[in-house]
Length: 296
Image (cartoon, rainbow, N blue to C red; front, side, top):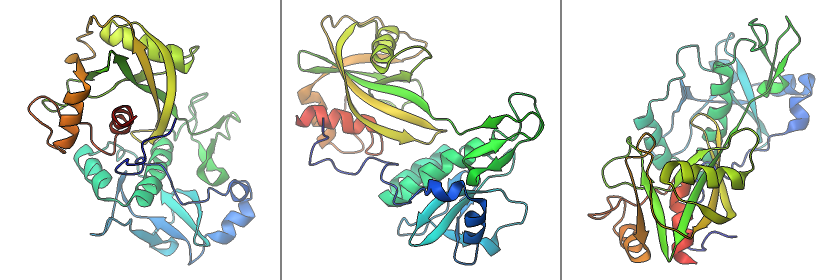
């Protein structure tokens, strides 16, 4: 299924213009030749991006980076190699207010570049030691792998799959609010896919666990890479036959059914919402899912 043609923004963190150039990653000589004066290194403050007033990312040259800094190869763009620095230990905690600012300020392509870089360098910063034997690891394949010389183990960046789903009943949608949400903000239910289950099974399980609702006809709609720290949000829709709710208060502050008119009114009210509801922000996949449902 396609998102509505009048979707207000591209999916946040998707659409990176960088060619990941896997053929260069596996060729140390070719990669070394690209680490020259033309190469660009992303300006990062820990895990946060530096950008100008026009929402464009700022870049260093190789000469601006310390000799001991680990660099990961993001890929090729404009016939130049692009890298990102791995932050020092202890600097990986996200400052979420600044991250939210970046999501609203960065141009879509730059936001996608930053999202991929953030996921990758955060993984490196948290995996400096081997999970198999505890010895130090070192980057390989341009930063898309870490190797342990002590035991020979190879480690690869991971992405955690998360389902985020609409639940429909008689032209209403079920939305929930987490304790960390500001007042009046509701969004689609979500949860991690667990080992040994399909996407469809994860959708059904999470909805039943959080809201006590049984669903059917689970369908995939759209996905979004989400770099906090590294997830793939898998957007789905489903149908409930019985609307009765049993809310898991350890997961949700509240959950309720919203009519089409209520959702339309909240969307029209803009970022501050109306008296009942703040519509999910445009950088969130939930925004696109609900907009798709309203505009079908």
